[in-house]
Image (cartoon, rainbow, N blue to C red; front, side, top):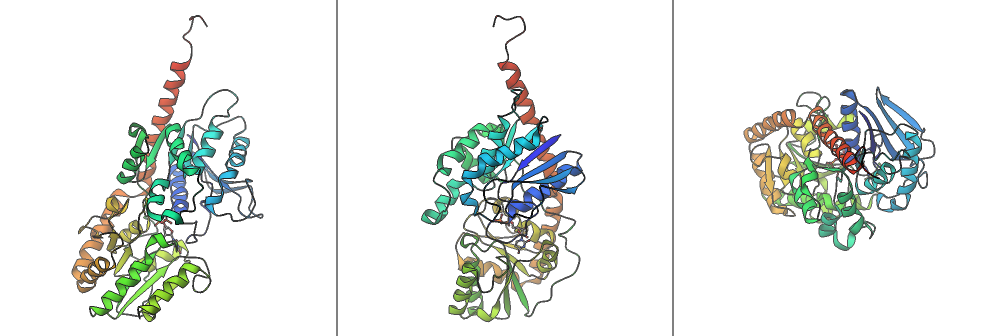
Length: 418
Ligand code: UDP
């Protein structure tokens, strides 16, 4: 198959951990790589966000990234990219030339707009089938972030409209299917394919980062309030009161200068200072993917305590490295982390519950070991990217077959009066 991925803000080639660079970048890169390995020809279209980027980058056989000129050749926050979606679609169609792909797959609602726009422009009248992965939904974001949601106002009606117009939707977790249904989208065209984890990179064996204290709790992700890192700092203070004082909280993510310039980093450090645990907290800033496994392996527990989470790749990486996860029971985390199986669920936004779960793990090497090993097994059995690519391929085949049927039934029958 010839596959076009559109990922307007999340380039598979970007460094991770910044405000707008996280799971979607990993997802698009890994899924595209796995599909190319299965013999498909994959092109990822993303917006040029720096002047010196080459027009095309060949990543591996059958996989290339195309930087499309759409808006300024500079970083633009993802919530300000809507005006450039038409230019993005223009660049995609230009690159297709006379040979449109078999399928176009939009990532995030704005890319869905560009995908639909491009798919409808084939001069032969053929409409390229469109598959959509939302990664995050505006309804959920609004519910949790309220006035702090910086999404453009148009998202309220454009996102459901993308959902209604595309041929198929790949939801990353069961919770998303309910949200889509509540948006008025026909669940008959929704399949679930979770995110995967790179099992060659993330495993239980290999180098281990050194740690300065007896216990280490790890938090990994973009430094944005909704990831709930402040809740883990509060939990650290509860743990200290409960007698677990030789514990370090390592926070990975944020911009390169996470220590001093990042406002969220400053907020977290202030909080730690006010709670008297500043000497137990390290903000390491952005870390490359290659360095991540050793850091995961060095932790007694990984805390993933977001307010909400469309999927969450970090818990899968932790599980693949054999580390138990304390997970807020929200969104994709309820699918990926098995309560008392591969980690412990806690109610959202509840530092005391986080502290209790962490205390149970820190107190028992046996429990850590049991949950960690089960996590490693589960990650291998269920979340390899090759398996996710095979599931994604099924959605593509369905979309192609359904579009072909729809086109055939809309054509006049041979011999019928026109
Ligand atoms: N990540 C990384 N370096 C960092 C911070 C994060 O490589 O400094 C990676 C992390 O390992 C994971 C991804 O970024 O693969 C974050 O994905 P997740 O789905 O957990 O969160 P999102 O960013 O999508 O909200």
